[in-house]
Length: 232
Image (cartoon, rainbow, N blue to C red; front, side):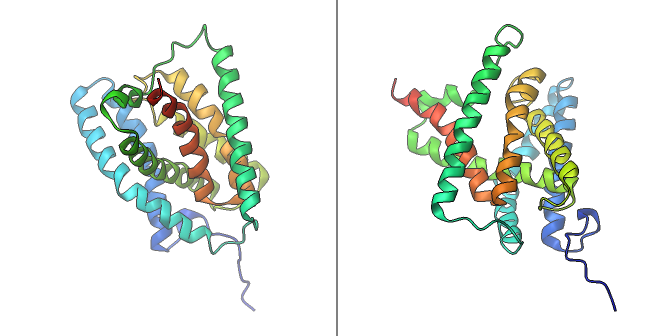
């Protein structure tokens, strides 16, 4: 009798078009980092890398988010009611804010942090416009994050503890470096202030396996930092 494998196959062997697209996003994330490193030495290269990255960022990557959602919806994942989802989101926000605050204190004298460029658009952009752009971009960033995790873990699920967390550590590192050009190639800031807190999303994914919750935490984290600038 033929043995039925209920586990997710390794992504590189998966013939499903949706999974192949997710693999593409994961590989593109790595390609983008390599391009930005090369772009550090050549402004012409960086121009084309940013152009391609922007095109993928604002359309295919966003589509990838909803493709991932459609895939994991059919998987065996934790059952969560509305209250459980809210608790996870609020809990994650509290933990992430505390973690970032502690990191900022510990690295105050060792990392010359660069502000996110979006802060400088506040005066010329309405809150509604900024909200739409931020919400849309978070779809893309979470797609990159989850697809990179899928690339290294071999599945979306928590199946092997060691592989799962190693995959999230790699994903967090890559996600931090993905912001190199945004933060003026401040490697330590990207790795420690962005990459390190991203590891907490591994816990959220383990507990929910829902892209929508990943998006909600990421969006609210950034939004609650930016929104007060409109009140000043």
